[in-house]
Length: 159
Length: 389
Ligand SMILES: NC(=O)c1ccc[n+]([C@@H]2O[C@H](COP(=O)([O-])OP(=O)(O)OC[C@H]3O[C@@H](n4cnc5c(N)ncnc54)[C@H](O)[C@@H]3O)[C@@H](O)[C@H]2O)c1
Ligand SMILES: [Zn+2]
Ligand SMILES: [Zn+2]
Image (cartoon, rainbow over all chains, first blue to last red; front, side, top):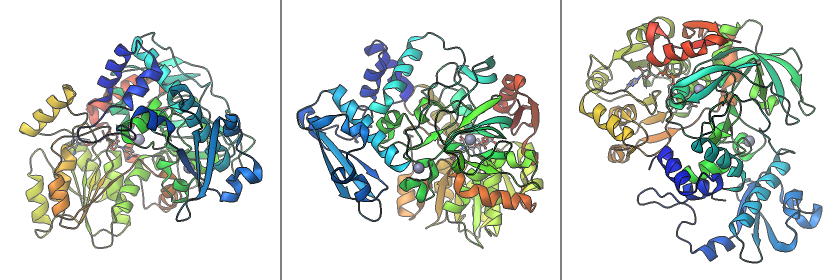
């Protein structure tokens, strides 16, 4: 299915809500192929470990040594964190999951926190994109849906 | 400042927009001195790349002068004359360390959009939709450049602006195709598409030692450029059977390396063309892959096919059986510009790589709408329109 069509449909269905649009997008299936977790039952999908691989030594990532990166620490003891060396000089696998069954917003928080933690460890800061120059935004439903999707994108995806 | 914005399908215009500012420590702000159209923009302007918002500043192939430097920038100074790569890469993640810069893990703040589409998210790009970061593009008086130490390159004095500009995207893309397809001395390389990217892929293949390089297109003025400025052979697919011609020119083997530099709006003749166009318009396939199909069929057994043209979604009638049974290596990528720009600038400084002829139309930024019209219709021999902000 074509993405513009998907966006058209999703924005119709979701009344223009960008986050809902992206969530739908993640469940678009190519014929014969699924997306990550597309066949998990929702409970199991929500409880999975979510992981990023960070190109740093395990010692630099280890919560016992330096404390958790701030974005993950902010989630407190609602999450458990696992740090393991990645194979083949790929650095360190940093994984986290909730101790309870989380809702979609909490999962979004965790995705964003993992991505920010990785950026802080690898780059030292989180790349920003706003505010930046743009021209007149037409007030269309697709435009609003896309704006919402872009804003929700750091918290969405298959992570 | 003035900037070129996307204002809807097939509509671009020039607007007054706010100036960019430093947002991250490793940013610089450039005063843009030259910025050019790329074939990728056509897919975007035509509405084939979703996730564009009206008002988005477009443009990703550019150079300029550094006017402001973030506190975390090590090697750039105000006043540096630099050319900038189109993809935004951190330089420190695993992908960057493998020199696969367009796959950078820390270049796209909106990974959720493409992860859903493709399973993983590639990096970010200037002026190329919110799917690849939503960064403001370069068709403007000023542009913010993140990770400036990694993505900007000081242009050697001997290289003019007119030449250096294309190291940004067209040359680095072409070079990547020739290199990652594994071009070796003695090879025959065929390139589909004689736009800026295809021409530079052909030139790179020659510099990498290919014995015979053949470029395929139908636009006579572009084929003439290939003959005159690149020094490669040409085939006009509108008057010649490409498969038969390539077989004949390669002793029946087929080219060792086939580089596709056409993309998702490939033109084709006859039934195949109508079939693809109709399916794309009905949204039954997102992309028209006729040049990729031909490259796979033409390639010698055990050869290598590299897809430089941009595609976004599933394609139809893909000759997977030919690829598998002929033992082909099939590869593609968005440009890993940072990997190739230093050596490209050296070749440019030595006069082995010239690009001035690509700039067929040079005009003020205010004329960008006309520039894109010419570039899209390929009228008046337009190969690249270059804007001077
Ligand atoms: N991989 C990357 O990072 C990257 C970077 C830049 C551009 N691109 C892509 O490369 C492609 C070419 O870019 P460009 O700037 O040279 O574009 P362009 O539009 O100037 O050139 C495309 C050429 O392809 C020719 N063509 C169309 N159908 C053909 C066919 N069936 N067989 C042979 N030739 C055919 C056209 O006549 C035209 O000359 C585009 O898809 C663009 O999006 C990719
Ligand atoms: Zn480009
Ligand atoms: Zn990186």
